[in-house]
Image (cartoon, rainbow, N blue to C red; front, side, top):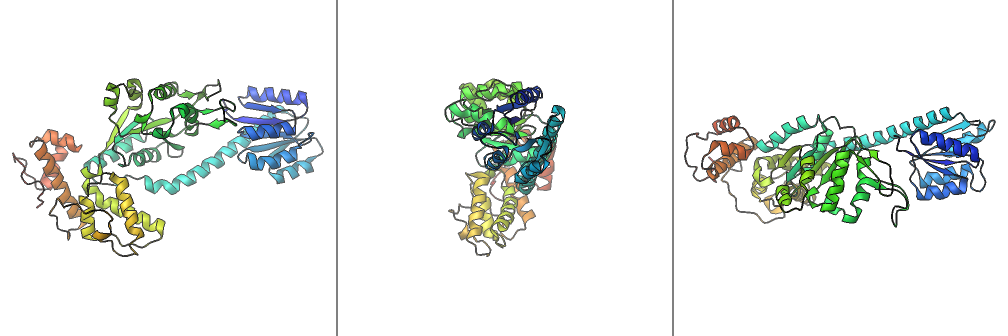
Length: 461
């Protein structure tokens, strides 16, 4: 079905009724208006994709309607109907904003062809604008890091991005769940389709259906025009449902039905509208516990949890911090038109050892603030804007980035080995790597396989 809404304005009853019937048979929603004044009222209270109007009508003429449409419905394409021999008037209408014209007597098949061509052209224009905006944002959608957990996630992105399977992303607030969702979307077969992000925690219970699925004019008080929902906006691409664990139970049932049917119905409407989208959901809650307490539906959980990815907190992947700092420094130098050379070794050491309760989001804010006040000078420890935590490492600040990264990797593996009583299998599982990968890491970092107790994990040699 087309799912496009067409405003038709013509004062000839027979022509209007016949054309409305033809358009309805082609799958269009038709708002048929008896004259220009009726069409202007409809235009003020409806969202339309195209307008078909006669030029000669009592009251508001077709030419006047076109001028009003430029302000009320700039997104709508316009086709004018004119009498034979009035081509000059039709050309004048096109100069005023119309896209095409057709002369009477009408050949309905030709009009339908021109209408579909116009709608297809408008869709391409909108897609090109969307892609232009997306390309400008793509650099900020990359996963940054070289920790085992991030490398594992990067590998998963390559596999997931070639499918449209639903994904559940788990992690603490600020760990970069939306960045991961965008990376999945833009790196694969959905890269040229819409990406629509929704904060489920910000949706009032009474508005969930209208926001997700849209509504028809008059569906409720204040619904003065048709409104497209997030599902339709994401059609063909990805719908990112952030903090899905905060949806109330009633809303979860509505969402489940839409995912199962792969179709939605706008509030106040009875038409079932198919949608082809991939759901990526994210949460900072433990949904399994929420299921046990009956705060989250188990059937919805199974629908969204086809593929599960967990983003670790920043304090558990300290080796990624220098890379993230470099990334954010480059980003804000560009955005703020600054020339900050970066962070001193002492400042970088403090960043690495900070607890980062706000995770990557907090780190980005610290870097941005430091660059704003650095006056293009090297950022020192005292410029970071937070209390310096006692360092848990004796790593020399004179180390290069590679050496520092290896030192932190070694420290972290030693710490986990100690926590797991030197159980290699449990340690590998905790680190998110295979057992053979752990042994290679231990060999590269000069960690003895035979040690039965790991002493002084804070000491890096």
